[in-house]
Length: 323
Image (tube, rainbow, N blue to C red; front, side, top):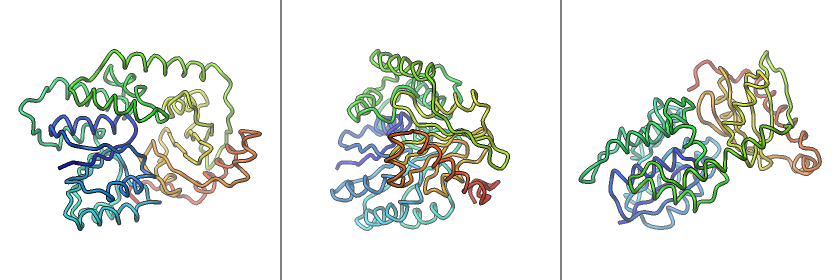
């Protein structure tokens, strides 16, 4: 029977899916790439067909679609379809209880990236496992995804797949990983291409909105087609000596990065989620903001800064990230 693999679009999600396929050795599967705020749509596609098992990887809970996700998973379980979920984001205890009560097998480990979760909790079914391959893949992807950069592959992996890359490239990377290769010459070409684009952005003048809220210095900028959000945010945090960086897209996608500020609480308030110092959300942008921001980019940035200001003033930054 065929298994459905539902994975995040970044290299951690792709790597986790690949390592799961490599370790289990299954040959019949279909892969769906998605984002947390679109997980319910991916599960709708999965539920419309019959799969022996559904595996979800590197997709944290997005509160805005949680009820829909729970409904689809309940439907799958009623049809006796096995569901396993591997993740490393912060989970509320209520989510864990809800999903485990309907029979979803959860493998949540915040100490590593999702590739590491798969490596730690998946029983190998193949006759032989290349431990060097597994170790390099896990350590390399975790080094970039967790922003540790304690492995030489970290800076390369985080640039290997970007959010605006086509799924055809994601599948190419997936297939190479599944074959037991943690690196390939064509990866180098892609990384060099991305680095060149990054240099173009960093050498140009960026439109920014800076604000001080509750003693915190916040910088808001537009996300870039050429630079991954994590790199652009790190650049802004350092260059502007900010406590928090927010990257906004015209379609309402927001990425939060910080130094010592619990941005996950902000993301949760806006219907998103993630990690304490790196989170995201998807919001609705008023039509007038979309229209006028085409004329002046800062209209969108000012709107986002005011929105986040209201959240901060409501004292939603709890000391315990699970509250």
